[in-house]
Image (cartoon, rainbow, N blue to C red; front, side, top):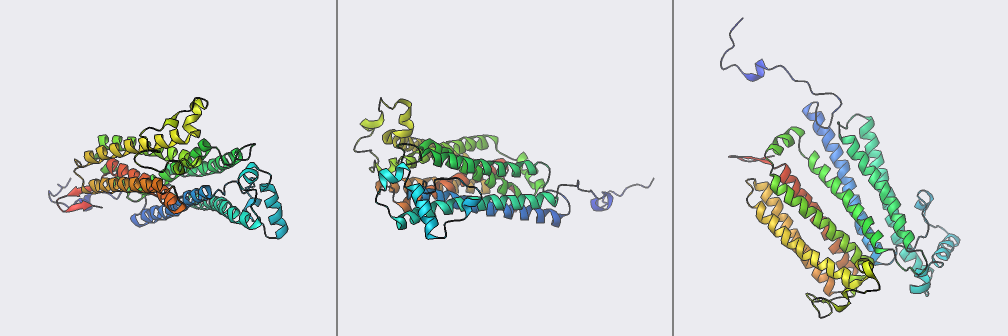
Length: 385
């Protein structure tokens, strides 16, 4: 047997490795794998943008009092708006039967009804389009074998959550159609918004995962920072709770009832913070309780965010430190938006900016968390991407 040269090229001695079949996201030829990952990531980016638009449009629908303008849930035929005066009159007649019209809008005419109708109809239509984009993308990638092991269930989960979101949306709307109700139940609104953020968070995480080759992620995880990752996970959960509390504030217009800062109605702790007749319902129906809780949680979130950011300064990875710096800047900006929103009585533009600020902050926390788990490799030559 011939002796092997000491300085023989590895590429000459190592047999070619074959990638496992059926995993076009993470295997196959370099070009094929990148094309599959890139196409699927582009699909997720489209879904991400559409869900953000859904959150913004849903916020506008709530703030304009338009959410109860469509009193029926018709998943298919409801996609088509009225096209004749007779059809518009029929829709308006249905709205006139609910308490919101009878108590809050008894003088509304057909022109005013059309204005609020288009907000709700647009929100529902966009929801249908999100479902269609998900279904078309998932079926295409699945049927063409471009989805690797473990990813089909993740993408299917997104679709199931989207379907659940539609059902929760109607469950929320139906709460505002009952006797004496002029708006939807605040806790149902919080569940509806929370589910939207959960879907958005999953899409964002999958986007970050697919932005880098699988082999690079496996190497990066060995250099991950478990403590920083754990702390950021806690911060992500606290941010999610704060988002739910914000929905409760919006649900009862609590942001427009106490417009001072840092005090509420001239008091550090408002006298109306607890109504014995409401009991546990104070946390959902008492404007003083709901806004006070939202403010205190905001302060706690800011403090914890600073602690997490300070911990991130010890990271040996420059990209990770940069991600946490962007995150803490977003926290500061969101606090300023929140204060401005309170002082001005939650006008539509500022309220929407505050809600979109929550979207940006939540995604940036998830991005920082991903960097803590999968840091970019660094060498004497710089960051390896």
